[in-house]
Length: 345
Image (cartoon, rainbow, N blue to C red; front, side, top):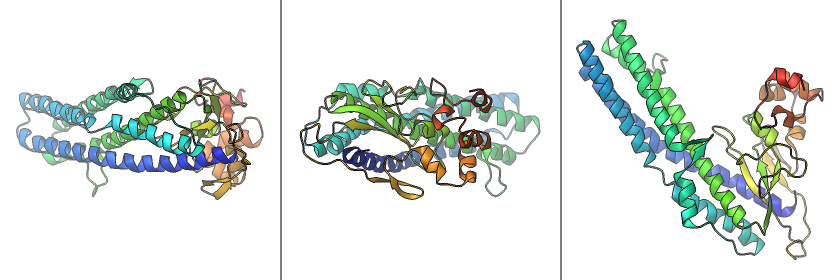
């Protein structure tokens, strides 16, 4: 990785941390709305379950479903994805093209509005994912209430099924719903960021000649992002420089993905600037390492337990024996292979 690419790697990885901080702020907004919804449901349980008659229970479930639907519909209006997309294009322009001394072409506002209003996560629109979470919670809520009534539980016991109890170590269905909502917020933010950056790279294809994935080097990196670490494609998403894995839209590659796509630009010499390109370093959980370190080299610097925990003992054994590469963890469509599939390679 030359000096120019190293600069972009450092800047974009640092920006990814800032994006996660931004995400945390958005998650707090969602938590506040879900907490308000939780209180409304709790009031309804206390007020409408004084009589366990079937009509009373059915009325409660209908009204609670509306409370849940309203809350999740409100959550989606809290996000300014158009503003986020605009901020990301400006970041790319200032970080990438300003440093190179060239003017950047930015996507039009219409393009940014289109990508922000139609955020696709694993093939499904963001709005559909929120609707699914809403429906799932309403279904689980109804199940818990019916089970509690059928077992002649007290109102407090039924409330505990929904809200949970930290003192008793009972999570309740709301804890799962909050985690799923947080994951959707994170992935939505990363998707909008990725789409806006890619649009900006493509608008400047005379300067950006390729794309590279940067994966975080630590014990939380997923198998998908381990395999994709350092992979490169041309501006159209075709694999280059030995990469075999498909681009498939870039990052995020999974829920909670922390990886990012950075530009491969013309070098200073290609731009007519007489500056030597040198290697540098980048951060990892082992401190600073050379910028062109591969994930395989990174793993070899740790003991066997580290690789076993990260890859799984079976996969790590095959990798240490040289029977598979880290890229082999994925199939031709960029999806993780099972251990039996890897053994058959």
